[in-house]
Image (spheres, helix red, strand yellow):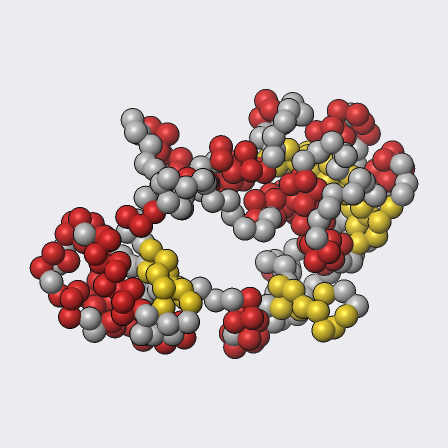
Length: 340
């Protein structure tokens, strides 16, 4: 199967206001990058300096063109736009392309509020900062720009659906994608917790699943109740046969002691050895790989996970998490660029 360029002939404008949070610029950049990779001509408004690192700028700008045109000129020649609430308020819906994605931090009634907020506060509102970490420490935020890039994927999904939809000529389509709603969707397991009288807190070292040290780094201890016999067999640690660990209730009552025993065994094994044990015994253990490990992993190399970035073939980055594959002719869906 080979990659396709279904959006060839489509002009996309990325126009995020200077007052918008960085997360919306990054999200629009991710959605635009996907469209560019799939053949669209993507034009980015030259906004204020955001201070993103060079690698982020290089990754998001690949295949795009920067524009010094006025907002009106840029939007006027686009088939699709990625904008924020401020641009929508300024231009009105009639001043935007037929297919437009409006990005916001909070969505709903707050979509165009313009109040002080950031990706960090949206992540906190979605419960992401309460997932991991020690109870007495400050919350741990996700690394990189995961929240913003997830919003970009959400916006792209809406645009892709709009572009293949059957709609009457001249009928505009507006996709609204918010960071908070995207993060709540990602952290969907936390939604039922709203009904709890007491919200669960971060448990740190008392958590059932732990990140433990091993001989050359760290590995994540993850297992379900049916995995326990296989975990014992894989580690061959006599202490795990003690009666206090025989049931899940017993293990939950002795989590710190259990983690210490397993970590002691992990310290005799490398990450690769833990990986091999996990495969042999069908266990969901997760060695923590470094970027260099991930780059040289045979499976990743076979899949072409890393590709040249920019004109320097020696610089590589993970490819986008979405590609368009050729399929049987009867199942192909071609984008009708001219349908408005």
